[in-house]
Amino acid sequence: MAKVKDVLSKKGREVHSIRETDSVSDAAFLMNRYRIGCLLVLAEESVIGIFTERDILTQVVAPGRDPETTKVKDVMTSPVAACGLDTELEECRAVMTEKRIRHLPVVEEGKLEGIIASGDIMAWEAVAKQETIDYLYDYLYGKQP
View 1: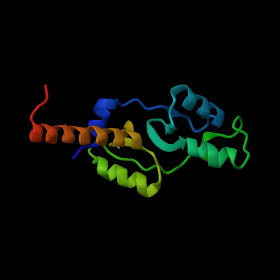
View 2: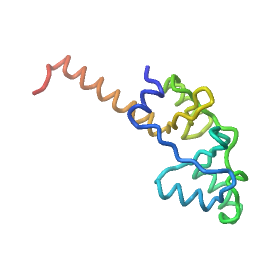
View 3: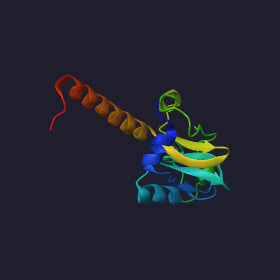
View 4: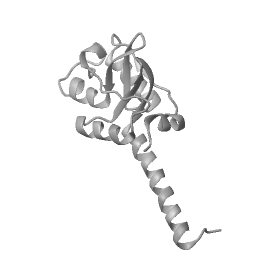
């Protein structure tokens, strides 16, 4: 069974973050700049929260808060569900489904190692299924030139 470390070895371990004292406007700017759906909120090296597109909609826009003056710490999601490098993708998918989230920070011995998204899991599974299909096709019909 595939594990988180397998996905990170292909996609990389880059993580975008923000400080809890930064404004929601700053966070939105970074999310747009990097074309990502979330930022991890870090204090030192520790993950203390996650700020997502959903947080912008439900915690800022809907209640009419000013994104320039609202701090990330006031609207971030905390505590954060996380996984480890050896967590199986199936378990990550189950946690994401149960908690209705799309991102899981990868933390190993208190150190941030990366982030995995539901799209990463779907892409990994799609490749694995295509490899199975190709193998079975070759087995049944012979390898195609």
